[in-house]
Every structure is written in C-alpha cells, then in structure tokens.
Image 1 (cartoon, rainbow, N blue to C red):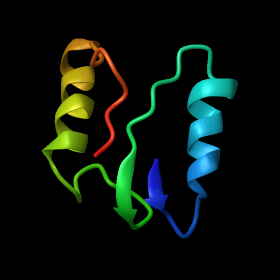
Image 2: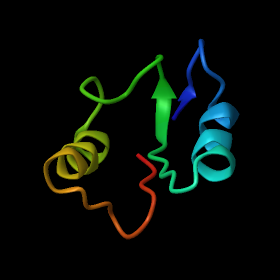
Image 3: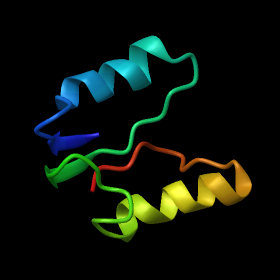
Image 4: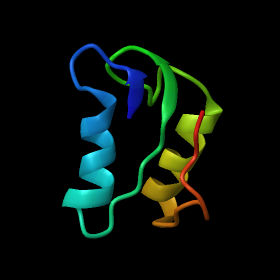
Length: 64
C-alpha cells in the first residue's frame, strides 16, 4: 500500500491485508504514486521478489 496513492486510498490496502484476506501481508510505502513495486526502492522490491522466488515473508510487515 502506498500512503499517497491517488487511485486507491491507503486504508483500503490496510483493510484488504488485515481484514479481508485470511493470510494478507502489507508492505507500506510512504510516498506518492499508485504502485511502489519496481518503482521505489529495495525495501519494497526485496521482500516481494523473495516471496515470489521462495514463498517466504519477512518476520514483520515492512514500512518503507
């Protein structure tokens, strides 16, 4: 979830990860724009890439 997302309010990302999905996981990007993966920094990209390659998540939800 991007805190300054003009299309999808951040609270919707929080609700999806924590209330809607049974096993949701939220990576918060404190910045502007609709997406952060591939456009921001390693704090966002690394845990996403690791999950895609290994299925493993960080021990805590990152705030970048």
